[in-house]
Image (cartoon, rainbow over all chains, first blue to last red; front, side, top):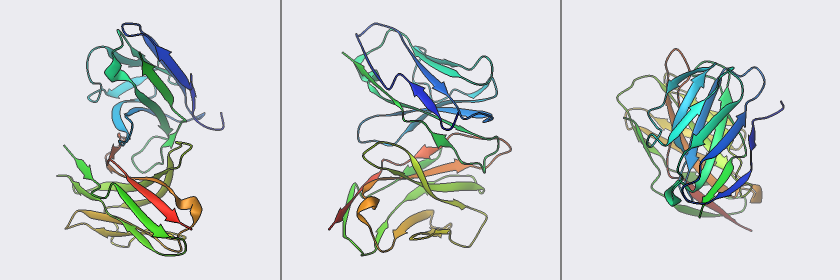
Length: 114
Length: 116
């Protein structure tokens, strides 16, 4: 697609429910990243993929968070048993492979846990 | 682990004036990239400028330029001839340079206000 697409744009869920956030990267982009941005803060790295392989998940806060990219394109970030502290903007970015390539960000999913 | 610090939560500048946003970072790596991203009220993340640590020359993009001081681990952004459209959150970010891609480490941001 023309840009990184995330869905849904907004999600309100009750505490304890599971949520799945979707990211559709720019066509041909090998690398895909997930970030979390709390209000008034900078984005915080969660995890990233090259193709379908998860390269680094050191930023995932706990085992309720997981991510997959089974076919090397669309990725899903899943949060199980959501808690209020999970409320944030979740951003996806994609890039061509290589540290010198620009990462393009999606519009984000605003998650609110009530 | 690397850290990025932006010590100015908010800055204000008159339209057409020049403003400098500060950023310092800490890393044990010798080869890395530094970035400034702009986040307007629409909450997009827009790359403003990028600096490779191995390059001594400071990066410039039109009205935007950086002052990269590697020994001091400082990376400030200068915006010349400020325009109303420059009003946004600005984030400094770091990425280490390896064979493949890597995640970005961001600062907490500086809110830039442009006074008409």
